[in-house]
Amino acid sequence: MERPFASVTVTEKAARALRGGHPWVFAGEVLTKESPCPDGEIVDVYTEKGRWQGAGFYNGRSLIRVRILSRNTNDKMDEAFFRRRIRYALAYRQQVMGEDFAACRLIFGEADAFPGLTVDRFETLLVTQTLSLGMEKIKDVLFPLIVEVLEEDGEKIDGLFERNDVVLREKEGLTQNKGWFALPGKETPASPITEICENGVFYRVDVENGQKTGFFLDQKFNRLAVARLARGKRVLDCFTHTGSFALNAAKGGAEHVTAVDVSESAVEMARANAARNGLTDKMDFLAADVFDLLPQLEAAHEKPYDFIILDPPAFTKSRKTVKSAERGYKDINLRAATQLAKILKEKGVDARLTRSTDVYLKLAERTAFANKNNADVFISLHCNSMPKGKSGVAGFEIYIMALPSDKDAMNLAIVENREISGDAHSAAEIQKADKKTQLLLKILGDMQQNDKIGASTELTEVLHANAKKSGLPMRKVAQAPFFVLRGAGMPAVLVEMGYLTNAAEAKRLNTAAYREKMCRSLAEGIITFIETHRGR
Image (cartoon, rainbow, N blue to C red; front, side):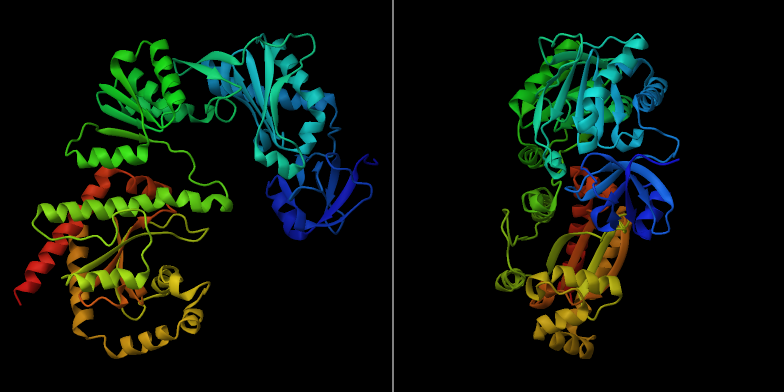
């Protein structure tokens, strides 16, 4: 049977991905296309050998050239096809969500074979977000059809609000917008504000001005978990927004809950939601910057909370915003260093920081500071990361400056030495970029038994023993030519406190209790080393 669609031919790599279930074909994977091949229309996808791989929406203006819609040659992509797809999606949600079907995500883009379309339900209001040109072109048919299928099942729908105020639309050649969609035979609702009930908790939701589509429906089961874990505890909910986690904690039996957000309007919304649920006697609310609040709580010598919820906004969503995201990550290092200095001072040690604010010191300036102050030891605190594909790596690591003990240690030195090596990506490139490195490595090869390296090794062994004793997730002790340690006139080590590319470890590093444990272990090790060394 002759197909009514234009066709594109894709690379074998793309074909393999499609056969494995991938929903997209990227721009660089299209070899040929029929003319005309209008943007936003359906095309058939073939291999170079003429094997049909599926049909999907084409967009020559997008990096995602084809979004797969069907993998069945019998599908006609007519109204009956989309009605069937809608029924499949709704039946699944009805089964999974149970009593919360009135507040849930009905259609979730590619997961439901509606590429680029999200449909959330908030009681009698639907909220859509359309991120593909193909879905945009058929929405006049699709949106009334969704409402019709819901009403056939006895569900009441009063209106549909479009939340297309996202930059991603521009990558598809679409403009940003938001507003009511005109549903046939229905009047526009008087207000974009409604009330929902999830997990037995009631919320006021503003579908026009709330984040995303108005409410983070995807956290339903995490909120349920919080309710169980919070029983009998004093809870701090950071970045509370609508107060959803805080409210679930209070309803789950928490002794008391403090909800914090930098936004005054968010705090007021959370406070109103608490009143709506009769939970105000168990909750208080604070408009404050969490990044300022947490250090204040650490400095107060009190432990008012035994359960802390951290669900921060994304530090960065693209390479363009990496710089603005760095504050969140740098804060971990600075807080740990400040905490370690505080513990050492409490024990009578004159601990000094190379920096006490968010400023950058060159590598040589750090050891120069230690030398100027006649320090007994030099500790350089860092957080580690792994390249894509190794996100599971975690653990506490301690390094001294010497010949590299393994490839991973050398690769870490490459990253840490980037200030002097520029864009170098290998040991050879580093040596070429900085002639001092070549000399350094040669010298290190002749002085492995040097007193400084020997003392640094001893310091490392003490810190390692203490870390294991404290139950820290110790990964390894190693050596590499770190420039931050090069100029130190005293025993010096570099400590990698953990991997930010490991989600669980990043969360752990952001908790005051873990940093306290880690810093006390380091402090005890430093004191033990100093006392032992002075006696010689």
